Length: 448
Image (cartoon, rainbow, N blue to C red):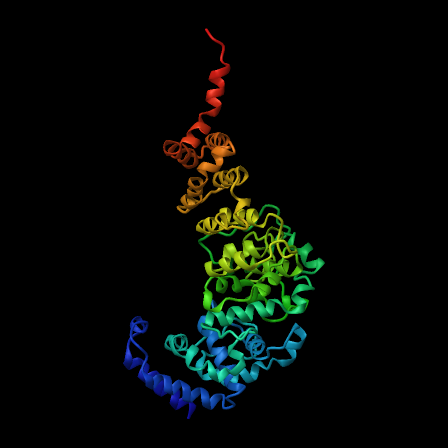
């Protein structure tokens, strides 16, 4: 019966519209009912099994890569068992065979005897569209308390749901106590990662854009965080939670307390997930720099969080507690100058509590230094340089405009020098400041 229902759904989909039009043409009600009927047969227990299956399908609709069987099972189990606090507690509840039996008709073929292979994905794009467009709201009441966070807030989107699961997982006790690498693994990471370690004539393998990361890492030594007691969902949660963090809106933001704990400065927790984040394929050699000691909740939110979340953090966080680095706004701004969206600088710059950390000569000196070090032509540098226009009066009153002009000129930073000169044409105070040293030189010059 299940096979016949699935076959009927496929026939209707083929007759309804090609995939290129699926985003604009509503899915037929018949298809929705067929999928609904099929799910009810696979997961008849509406209070538990139904919630497990629905959660799994939602996660598959929004995932950035195929899940492994164990990853999906751990994530779904964590969501439906709200009082789990440790990796060990969660491990005892996971039943991946049962979950796969419930969602089997909705996913592509998989190898049950290879549960850590990244292979679980939805069988059809139409099902992905159906989940995103209809099921997120249609079945919100069938999940009972599991459709809400600890504060009773409903998940308005699959992105908010998976972000909550990732954050909750990374807040499990072991993630903040154990280190992702053993001492032996740290020593191994210092060795050449190619298979031929003793060939002195062979150049080290360097990544380039003409090969995939998987090909580059093929012969490298790998690690398994689960062997360190961090569980089976640690890799996915560490690597992808920042991407979902940037998508959540004001209607479904995570709690400040959870983000501050997850990103607490100088903690084992932030060290662990950042170390994993830079190694998505679990090769010992990282793909990119991500030094955890440079980050705290504000800098992570400036780089990865949504604008809504950044505004909430600036308004409600206590920046004097241990979660944050000293001069947190300055250090967050430094990360933005190197890696982030320059428009976020203005938000920090105008903030009534933290903006003073940036409204000074030291910040603009830092800006020029990062501009000079940058090897990438970024059009959004104009968003950073535009902050100079907001400081004309202050740099004139505090008499550091001329020094800034000298720093810009010596660094060859024409955009900053030109903005200062342009601003002086319209601001008498700034004009006098830029001419200050010249005027002093004229006053003390010997008469002929």
